[in-house]
Structures are given as C-alpha cells and as structure tokens.
Amino acid sequence: MLVRTAMSLLARNAQLSVAEQLALESVCSSARRYVARHPLLRTGETAPGVFVIFRGIACRFSALPGGHAQIHAYLLPGDVFGLRAVVDLPMDHSIRAMTPMDVGLIPRESVRALGEQFPGISNGFLRLSQTEAAISRQWLLNVGQRSAFEALAHLFCELFLRFQAAGLAEQNTCALPLTQTDLAEALALSPVHLNRTLMKMRRAGIATLTKGKLSILDPEALRDAARFDPGYLGELPVRLPTVPSESGTSPRPDAFGIHREAARMHR
Amino acid sequence: MLVRTAMSLLARNAQLSVAEQLALESVCSSARRYVARHPLLRTGETAPGVFVIFRGIACRFSALPGGHAQIHAYLLPGDVFGLRAVVDLPMDHSIRAMTPMDVGLIPRESVRALGEQFPGISNGFLRLSQTEAAISRQWLLNVGQRSAFEALAHLFCELFLRFQAAGLAEQNTCALPLTQTDLAEALALSPVHLNRTLMKMRRAGIATLTKGKLSILDPEALRDAARFDPGYLGELPVRLPTVPSESGTSPRPDAFGIHREAARMHR
DNA sequence: CGTAGCCTTGACCGCCCTCAAATTATGTGG
DNA sequence: CCACATAATTTGAGGGCGGTCAAGGCTACG
Image 1 (spheres, rainbow over the protein chains, first blue to last red):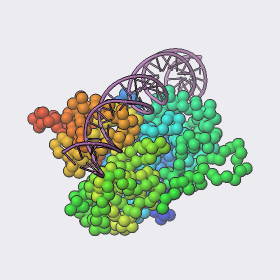
Image 2 (image 1 turned 180 degrees about the horizontal axis):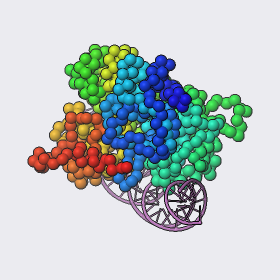
Image 3 (image 1 turned 135 degrees about the vertical axis):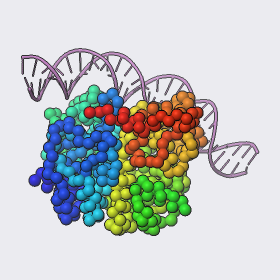
Image 4 (image 1 turned 30 degrees about the horizontal axis):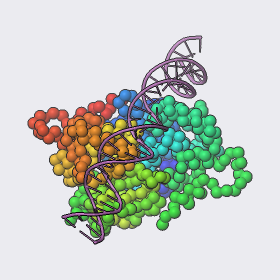
C-alpha cells in the first residue's frame, strides 16, 4: 500500500519502466518500522542493500568532534539510501531517522541481479545518485556562498518542492517535523542564529515553521531571496505555490514555467 | 598511450574488468586538446557523453552573481565528467579546464550500449558517482565545519592522495598548478584570507605551495590539522608521505588506522 | 505538575570579508 | 634582453555576519 506509492515515486525519479518497477517491488522487503532518531546506517559499515523510504524523514550526516553534526541531505519518502553498498563501498557518513519511519530493503545481491537483467534499473540508480549530487551542490552553495537568510529560503524551496513531488504538500504548506537544531545542522549554522533567521523570515511574512508545519506565505519573495531555480531537482511535476492572496485570479506565468525557460537557454 | 594510462586509472577507480576496460577504450575518442580556462560543459546543456581526462586538471563550478564562483570538485587525470548525460540530465553546473588538457569522449549512446552488454560498466560509473559524492561531503565539511586552516589542510591531503593515486606525485610533492584564487573558490574563502592561511601553513613548516608545486613538509601535522581519514576516497593504493626526516624507521600505525577509530565515536 | 527539551532573546566576541595598496611573477612585443 | 602590461601574491586596516555564552519562556509528556 504505502509500498506501492513510495515505489512509484522511486520509479518516477529513477525513470523506471513499469516492468522494472514491478521487478524491484518483488524483491523489496515489507516495511521495517523505526522510531525517531534511530540510527539506520553508521560510518564504516556496509549497507545490506538499498533502503527505500516508505514513510518518514531521515538524514545523512557526519558526526563531528564536540557533539556537533553536519547534515548532508534529507531523505524523504520515495528516496533511497545504501547505494554505496551496491558497488561495495562502505559508508563514509551515517544515516539516522528524524521521524518515525517505514523503510523497505532491497538486498544488494538482488539489486545487482536486477541490474544485469534490467539495464534501466542500473541507470535508474545512477540517475538517483546524480540528482542527489546536484542537491548536494546546492547545499555547498547554501553553506559557502549564501547568507543565512538566503540559505534557509533555498532549503525551504527545495524541501517544499520535494515534499510536493512526494504528494506530501497542501496548497502552500507541508509537514516539516524538524527542530531548529536539525535545520541548523543542515545549513552549518548555530541553532541560535538559525532561530534569528527564522524569526526574520517570519516577521517578513515570507514563511513560517510552527509545530512542525512549514507555511510558505509569500512564494515569490521566498524564491527571490533564494534565487531558486528548481531545474536541478529533475523534472518534478510540481511548483512553488502561487501567491495565496490573489490565487488564480491573474493568469501570469508560474514560477516553475519561468525557471523551465531559464534552465534551458542552452542547446 | 596517455589514453591507456588514464583508462587504467579509470578502470581501477570503477573496478572494471580488463574486458570492460578494453570495451570502453574501443569506443573512446582520441584525445581532444583544450587550453587552460576553456569551458568544457556549461550549465543547462546536456553533455554529448562521458569525458575522460587524460591530462590536466578541470573543475566543476557554479558561477555566482557578482563574478564569483564556487568550485565543487577538482577533476584529475583518470576522472570522468558528463555522467549526467547518460541518464538524460542536463548540467546543473559548469565545468572548465584549469590547465591545458587532453580529454577523451565516450558518446553517451556507447555508454548506454556498453552498460547493457557489461553490467560492470554501469556499476563502475555508479561507483565513480558515489565516490565523487563522498568527496563532495568532505567539501561541505570544509566549508561549513572546518576553519580555513583545517579546510586547506584537508584539501591538500585529498589532492595529494588523488595525485599520488594517479601516479602524479613524487615522494612528498606534486604539481598543483592552481592559483590561490582557485583554491579560495573551492573553500568558499576570499583570496586574501586563503593567502593568509597559506602563509600560516608555510610558516608553520607544514606545507608550501610555490610556483604550482605543493610540498608537504610535515605530513603528520597536516593530517592532524585536517583530521584527515582517507577512507572516503575508496581503496587507493597510496598514503600520505611519511615524515621525511625519519622516514621508514619506526613501524607505527599509519593515519588510516588511527582515524578509522576516531571517526566513529558517535552513538 | 514537574522536568526536560525546544524556542527565543540579549550581550559580546572572533573569524573571515572588503577595500586598498605594495610587491612580485608572468608574459609580450620591440 | 629589456620595457611594459597584466596577473598573482602579499600585507594592512577596519567592519560585519554569525558564533558562543547565558538566561528566561514555552511546550510536551510522564
């Protein structure tokens, strides 16, 4: 049930055929349930296979001396982790659940076997890997080049679109059950400064994060602050919300359309 | 000739069989030559195939408003770029030559065809992709978590080991024909501050960068400053140089063993 | 209803940025 | 080989973004 929807998300992101999706489903274990903060994979170990997220949020992170951590990526329903094991690489980082989770496992032998039978599956995992790499490049820009405000705006744009693509967003809100410390660790900011930045964004009427719910009040301002261009996320069938106040009245080009054009001024 | 040595590097990093390596070589174009600073791939375009570096250094980067840039990765001989095209993804960043280069091209149709014939080739590219991802995670730590001094030390460790693995390092030196501005753009520092950091490292007798040559004077101090653990680079048949003064006399544990332990003090 | 975690705000500090200028490579034409 | 132009390196002075330390308020949950 949840398995099917998550596998459909995976299939879309990996551009799998129906046959390939079904083949993966047939070797995917039923859901294992984990509690929040449960460690899923630890630095140094080799994953037993590819995990598929059915429900909940996880993160990749590096533990740092002093109890701090750097979060490298958030993993949402439909995302996978453990790909390194398919190519015999141990984990260079760790993964933990940030919320209660349901996770499926595709044993790495099955992945390899299916990869030989269905080249599209191998390509699909490469595609997922490449899209994650593109996201991580944006995170490097978040940490190295953007101000705290811009970085937070960019992160909100990314997460909202990814939640929306996973069918987990309302009109202009989505559940984002992360603490401010979690967000701070993603943006390499102190919790204190992340709080100040969040307050600033709230007072500006751009976006709020309350009780684990992200609300985008002024999508255009958010996108402008982040200079957000969604092209790097792949061709998601979603877009940032239109302005709620005057929703649907003025037929002007939407955010996604604008960036679609800008993203391919090539060729 | 240079083609063979570069393809051997690629084959090792991707863990290709001899047959797979030969198959790739057979569809790889002879070397194209580029001058320094030549743009190889631009944001938005789709690469014609997978490029293999025979000679020279390139970088992935994002151009930023204001003429600045963030470098995401350095690409050395034996490295590839253009993998995104194999899975029909346009470039989310750009790539340019940093030195004169010789580059081979494997058309993306050939890559896909060989991927179906040789599953090991698909796996190999996934492996390369995963190793690049691990490197980029360390870069996020460089920019977000490490001081300028620590980050520069870590970058030097990474580059030296990768040059060494490519057969491009002497005992404790290697050619590193990058300007201080190039390094600054990799570490998200200003050129001014990178210079100060470099001077500090030089005056501490740890490492110097002069006339395009990196010299590691005190490998232990460098490794300690960076808290460097080479595991993430894959199983390279190399290591940081031993202390020149007392080389090879004392059989004590090497860096790899030490930091393996330290890296997992969490949970 | 108490305790613990999370959020919020204030005060102060430091790493790194910006601006500016001097000095040293690098390269180019005569 | 030299004169000149350009780029790269080096050093100084001053400022700001974000860190750290600290304290108080809010919320959740046993």
